[in-house]
Length: 81
Image 1 (cartoon, rainbow, N blue to C red):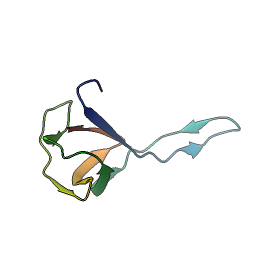
Image 2 (cartoon, rainbow, N blue to C red):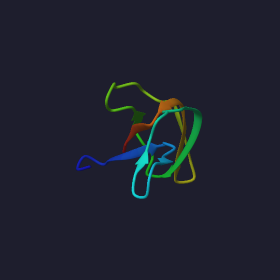
Image 3 (cartoon, rainbow, N blue to C red):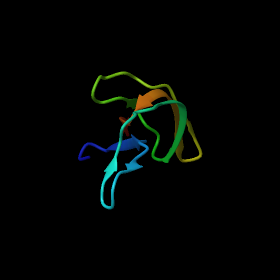
C-alpha cells in the first residue's frame, strides 16, 4: 500500500475433487485463534480494514505478533506502519 500499510491475507478452504478438472468448496469451516507473526517496522495499529476492528498486537525484535480470534474462508488484516 502507498501509505506504508501491509495487508495480510488469511485463507482457508477444503476443496473436494469432483470429476477430472473440478474442485468444489462445499463447507466453510470456521478457523479459531490463529497466531500471526509478520516481519515489520513497529506498527501504529493493526486492524481489520473492512470493519475497522482494532486487533491487539505485540512488537518484538522486528516482528509484529497478533491473534485472529475467528475467520471463515478468508480475512484481511492491515498493519499500519
